[in-house]
Image (cartoon, rainbow, N blue to C red):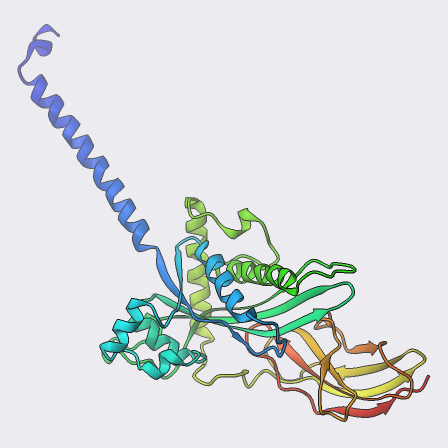
Length: 358
């Protein structure tokens, strides 16, 4: 034992062992950090469009900001809001990668969005639309429906030509609703209720993209970027989602509702002591999922229409009672279906006129 302790080799051997241990440990940390950085995918959120006929000012702009913030909290994603004034966009236009006309106009189709995303070096792009915006008076409440599609840039760009492929494939989609709190006798600004509804919808959309049910809420459901187990769970869900999208991929070059976004069929109007009752048949021959229905009424022979459903006519409903009717007034009605993964259906042909007689 004495010979070993006094050996001249003990110093070099100890140093060698220590260096080997450090060499084994340091690359692990470096690689892990680099791998974590590589897992951070850039998703460009294009300005949200508002096709709801709700006419609330700045609804689209507020939803764009809320959606970008909510998506940015998803583990493994870095969301950036598209801006035509950003230096990267202006440089891409100057170099001819993006047409200036595409930048100036509202980006509504995935082909243009993918071209812009490719020029900006994005991994994914997101297009979203407010398809329904309903304001209720008493109690005061605002509800909205937000639909969106996400496309993987590399999967939809031909590597050789750099052009968008003919058959687009979505990597994810969402159709979520957001409601503000109900406020009885509320006299405050609508913007307060609108912001509540927008934040609720944006959070649900982010949860769908993260692989969670939209109904789950709270900080734990939103996902924490520091959670390693959640990263693995998210990765598995994203891979499964991409596989499902690849198996069911369809072309989305055209803007507007899918051909499967079939309208319901209005069947009849019937007079009751205190109401006019509408009855309809659910959309036939569609593979899409109905989120809810919207119903409009006109009392001026179809010159103007107003929403009367309150945002609460569910996919299982086949009738609706219009109780807010006036004796001797003539009404006409129409409705449409809101779907979870595409724009709403067309409006049904109007049903009526019918004059309410109490």
